[in-house]
Image (cartoon, rainbow, N blue to C red):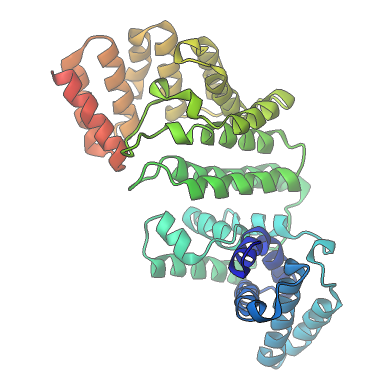
Length: 404
């Protein structure tokens, strides 16, 4: 038997995006919609312990939020705004109590939060706040910024949406591919910050979970979109390794040293099924295929590095970048030997000089090639750039080993 707090928390997590999206569509006001839903949840926490949990908690919460929005509109709209408010009130009053019988507006909300005219950090924060239902405090803690700073970021984003007249809609068909790619990029950035945090603990499971939830939502709302499905598969296959990526002390364990029995094989099965059913030729589909090669290997030595290098060849053709070239060089090194990989790394030195992963990868290949002093120098450069404590400790151990 769940407690009232657990029921409200579950509804808040699961239904915030849909409830807030519907209220924003009608009221055109982010703050009013969020506050009405928040107040409904707070009212439930006050009244349900005495009155009991309703048969349909979500319907109760949405009705309460809708009524609060109506009350606010009646109180606060004056002058010329009265006519618009009257129309909004009429639409809210005409809604049924069952939120799931109302058209799902989350896709509108997702595209609005990820609009390209907003700063990238604002897109991420606004998506997590309004679509995923995270609190300002949770988002601030996840991204290691003060709560007031994060609050100001959200306020500026909402003001920009209002003042710039950013439309609350799904983009027209001709603009959909680019805009959809922008939404996927935001979801992937959220996951990456959870997968390898900039500072503090290496893994932030809550951010990874929220990104997967957003990827599932995107795949559900726009079904049979290969790249969205590829993104979901990629996140599942990478997140499946989370338990094995650190040891009991919280230190980094590299892929080749991980205890693969600790991988989440249910997530792997789900991710592999998506890859097999819908092999994608876009960036996320190709990255999912690469992750699948790793997750299919029962032992590190069973990894098909030649296939991974071939997939990186295709990824570099589809979406070229120095980071993709770096990953391809590592795959070639694992397939053909460290010297082959080092030859591919040399041309990337200028573009990736400030990227600690470049120097860490180069150090590792130099170590494998038996070039200890050069490896030590590369490790020193990586240590000067790394921000995450778990990665730092790993690099320090490697640096000490090549110096011995």
